[in-house]
Length: 210
Ligand SMILES: Nc1nc2c(ncn2[C@@H]2O[C@H](COP(=O)(O)OP(=O)(O)O)[C@@H](O)[C@H]2O)c(=O)[nH]1
Ligand SMILES: [Mg+2]
Image 1 (tube, rainbow, N blue to C red):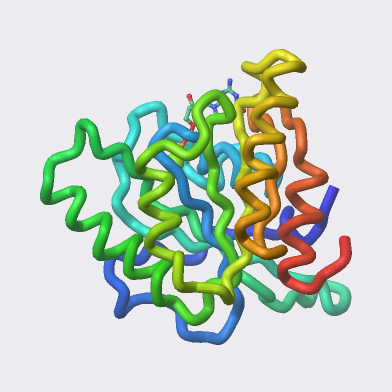
Image 2: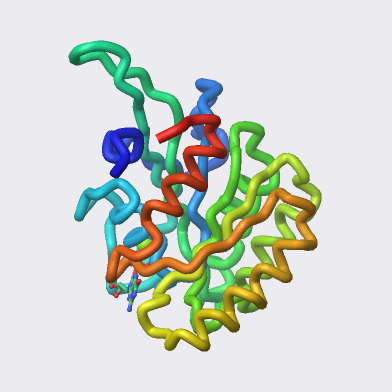
């Protein structure tokens, strides 16, 4: 349980890089293929059923959605400390070239350049991590040694114990190439497994204890 993440409130949607918040607060972005479970993860993390729109229609929204998280200062007084950012998904097999270009400009530009981006949670289906579209995101941030990374292996409820072990090992090996900046964990938004670990991981990025 975490009051920090429970405090999340929708703040704004951004459709171009010029509209990004410039208030100096750190931003934690959730990237992943359409349908990987980004919105579900944000909802479960913040214990709010409808905060991030959880869509059964992949790729409907092409906006960056910002959610403010706050700390309690005093009775009735809160101070915003960070943003969670729900990024538009990608799944290019079915997407028109114009959608792909828009995604590359907006999401690619954001992750490659935003100085306030603290880290990225790359939400992947644990049954098929590191698909080409995931690698594209990682290519966009290859030069950003300032970013933290969390490989979130979602839908772990769909895996048997042996498969869980195998995928975790595979992704842990991948983490090694990031020299301490990357970590990984199994997760299930559906079964609410791994929520405490996710909260701990993200709180540490923000220098907060829960
Ligand atoms: N089995 C399973 N399904 C999940 C899990 N998380 C999300 N889903 C389902 O995956 C679909 C896509 O989820 P959504 O959060 O909208 O994905 P997004 O496109 O990445 O935002 C929905 O039908 C969810 O119910 C999970 O942990 N396990
Ligand atoms: Mg979504």
